[in-house]
Length: 524
Ligand SMILES: [Zn+2]
Ligand SMILES: [Zn+2]
Ligand SMILES: [Zn+2]
Image (cartoon, rainbow, N blue to C red; front, side, top):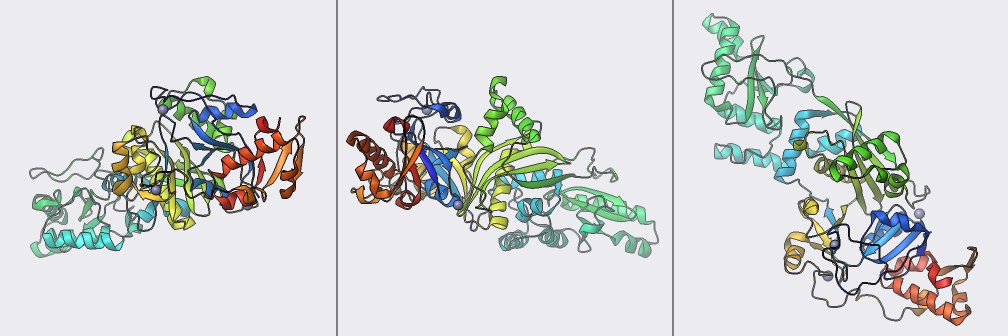
């Protein structure tokens, strides 16, 4: 059962962290906060509702998120989009049939050229995108359409190795075959190979090496480069081809491409780094905290005074979930390259979604690897392949904030409408409304926010278990019906008012089974 303590309404958490107060709107009033004030430092924006979750069932948090609430540590809040300067909308991505965009695929290819996955989790999160060997049906048909059109029309799109082999065989050299993964070490990572030089040498009574060199140069002239081959080399009479699409189209270091006048040069290739992933319960860990500090310093310019373990824990480790909900709760997905921690994704695993809370990474990773995008793409696969949940939640989206554009760059992204609490397609609905009015509450024509709430709340309120704190902080549980008998009357009215206000912001299912602690200001 969830136990929540109400902070009351019209909460002001100080200056807006997104526009720095430049877009503040008139009519705001501030109210001082109690003991948990410091936790609000990480929120720093106008709120409509604020709760301290002493404990929260994952099922209940899922209900709250689908009403636009979000947690930071144990602090659960609802932004005030009607009065706030930078309205924020919950954003999510449906995972059924999810496909990365072209630029997201480019990021995945770069990682594929850079690392190879080790272990089940990394394989499921990363390789299940089909960048090493496996392929999905639509990729297969895309490859065959390239083949039938006679030339490659979408050079930026990856085609898996088997389909690529078909293209190269028909257009370059029928004797090409794919190098089996287990012998790639021998061929130093080549993707395709041909032993045709041995046959030719036998027929022409010449040397195998000479035939192989001629064949390599011929393949290059025939247009291997145009077909996406990054490099050709010769090894023991075998002509090896390196697929530029598999390598992520990155220029390879220490590599010379064979030109028409030069013989191919055999170059040894660096072995790929190893990518490993670990899913851990959210806890304070020294290596993650160090990475967090490095990231915050370099990417966000945080002052040293802000980079304290307590603060980090309050923001990214603390959570209101209890361990009886075994498979749900707060987790850290840690990613390592050659055993060095490089990315930490802070996640909530909930009954209906994977919710991304924060992500920090090593700022020394090359910028072209787009570590944040890569982490998000891995999380979508984790949600799909491992958790089998239908949605990936990305927190809040602010239309005027450029740093948040990546959230709506995912195919099929949806924003939560503040009028009807339905999820609306960003591309088809929300974008148009936001372009006209970035302060809108919702994206449909219903005029009243929270319109689906019944007006008469009283009978439902009496099913809520209320705990009242007396002056010395001792709590007393009230039987549901007893709230009606609380004296003095003014106290009863204040508690009712606070409950009624909360009832307009949370789903009724939640209100009916949680333990509610009224604002301390109401019962003092
Ligand atoms: Zn603002
Ligand atoms: Zn529970
Ligand atoms: Zn709506």
